[in-house]
Length: 284
Ligand SMILES: NC(=O)c1ccc[n+]([C@@H]2O[C@H](COP(=O)([O-])OP(=O)(O)OC[C@H]3O[C@@H](n4cnc5c(N)ncnc54)[C@H](O)[C@@H]3O)[C@@H](O)[C@H]2O)c1
Image (cartoon, rainbow, N blue to C red):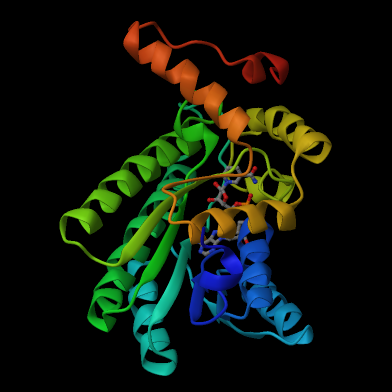
């Protein structure tokens, strides 16, 4: 069976949201395996720090400031990367934000940001890069960041949940389009469980309603206590992508439990079922 050291030991890797968390972890792992990493993020200093860390241990990397919420920026990135470095072997559409707060209280700007970054960022990453990938005629891998949240319901995280259900559906259709056209582009839905990143940090919640504070803090504490190490999760993701798996997990047991509950919910056409997590972190 193929392993990441065989598949991802050369070629160009483009990763969005690579200043922090899973994106930074995937960038470090791809760099350590021997790929030329283009670490992109809206946070230019953070992306530069990720690239510098890869170079410091003998790898190849550079940083680009890219806001995935702006489709043109992804088009320009794809053109620059293919012009300067040739074919992209690995594209990870990773950039994402959590949004907490009752559905009706989340301000319009935060709704827009969540949809633009988490969903449109993935859509336009694919739209911008795939034509170049097809043009190169080379084998390529695309990983889109879904979530265990793509299969359930989570009150207080509606905006985030909506985007992850959509990214999952988008990735499933994209996979089938590649198959239908017999294109050598492998598509994976990366479904992290809980990985210890900055996604629930207080400052990441700008623009959320005041009522989100307790929920965000409880999720932050839970992630610190139970989240998986970023580098461990990132290594698992690239290993499974190298095996051309559509489903890519850090916590397959957690995903199976949530997906199983979803199957029952759909088969029996039950009303939405309150997740234990929602009760555990209910603060007001
Ligand atoms: N951490 C988890 O447990 C978990 C679970 C399921 C899914 N995910 C998904 O993993 C992905 C990465 O999240 P993370 O947990 O590493 O979070 P994180 O907050 O540590 O990292 C997210 C990165 O995205 C960047 N970003 C935000 N807006 C951007 C924009 N407009 N353009 C470009 N970059 C932008 C941030 O600057 C940051 O570097 C997200 O899509 C998230 O939904 C994470």
